[in-house]
Amino acid sequence: MSPDFLENLAATVGQANLLTSHDDRVPFDTDWRGVLNGRSLGVVRPSSVEEVANIVRLCAANSIGIVPQGGNTGMCGGATPDSSAQQIVVSLTRIRAIRELDTSSNCMTVEAGLSLAEAQMAATGKGLMMPLSIASEGSATIGGAISTNAGGVNVLRYGNMRDLTLGIEAVLADGTIWSDLKKLHKDNTGYDLKQLFIGGEGTLGIVTAACIKLHHPPSSRLTFLAGIESVESALAGLDDIRGRFGNIVESWELFSDVSAKLLMQNCGYEKLPVQASHPWYLLGELALHGDGDEDIWAERLVEMADRMRCDDIILATSQSQRESLWAIRENISEAERTQGKGIKHDVSVPAGSIPELITSVLDGFEMRFADCRINIFGHVGDGNLHINAIPRETGHHIKADTAAAISELVYDASAALGGSFSAEHGIGSMKTAQMAKYKRAPALNMMRQIKSAFDPMGIFNPGKMLP
Ligand code: MLT
Ligand code: ZN
Image 1 (tube, protein in one colour):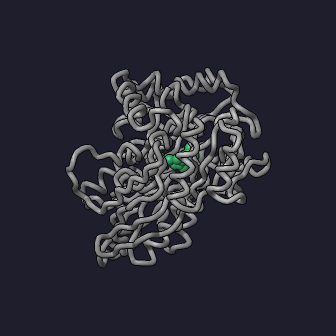
Image 2 (cartoon, helix red, strand yellow):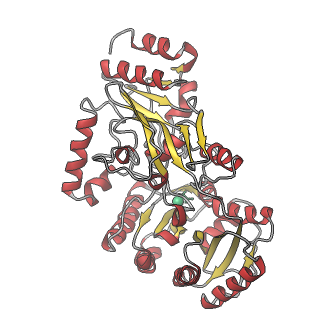
């Protein structure tokens, strides 16, 4: 590194936007869960794509690793620097303009640092909808959601970030600004290169803007919470609704009695708004278009509940009730965090194999891991469940060797059913060992070749994703 590297960096972004003191760096060097504490050489906060390109050139000339960061809400340490003090965090949150909201082509071109919530609001302001929704959407950014191919609670109907991204702009390893902000739904002109950056976790370049597909919002929504006796009923209910009415299900979220107890213990809930306690709960939301008569729909829901053998279901009758039902689901991660340092798993299997997955994880679990509980929740409709382990006693930590054994149990069980060890959170620095274990050698080889073609010096997010 040349002696004037930091000086040149400061000249690129302005002294105030290069943070080098310990106190200034800590919020960027630590992941939001407080699990990883990195130590960067500095944090730069560019305000334009040109500044990002200059930063990349400067880092490349000095062989300094670049860690792109959005809202720092990732789950796997993908945006946290290592502890070498040889990496620069590039925080994108000042590059946050809405460049265009095109109501004739139903898409918006926005910069990477805009939060998901701001993007959603902008679309709503024009009578449209940006459907990607995750619990951290107030801080999570467009660039972060693209780089991790974020999923969330609406994947069932609208897809994940990969499905919603029409075009991107990115800064490449030699500082080139690659603008591919197309609005096209169809484009068969060779390899679809943007797909490599979506879910690429900042290892191939820095995403600085994107063109995002928008949808027409439903004219109304039916949101309900049901107490159910089995996971099979949740799957049967989904099949029933889709079979009779088509693709109207926006969300189908499951959580267990353990989640409910955690909410009561740690988030101030006295009870859930259903009548009794149940082994499982289902939060569902249906999108209605046109003059959907809500009374008729309420009757249809009761029919569905009958088929699910459920007699404890509550339907939101106002927007505030809907929000409080959603808050239950969205507070589960926070309830886990208050409980103590646990471990998160983010697996997927073909939806029909979910009951088998749960049985194989829970079978004998308590005997083997008496100090821990498994908390299951997530996006049951698309086959993605969070099978997290939490300490039984509040404030305790799960020991490293226990954590490793539980993770192996969960990942092996998913792999045996043809599943994935990371459905939506990505790899970051936390799951590179699983990449080595579960990803087939030909896939890893192709990924390594792509990495060295795009980033021959290895400056982008060193140590992330690829083992
Ligand atoms: C969620 O769906 O709420 C998160 O992806 C899961 C988590 O916090 O483990
Ligand atoms: Zn999730």
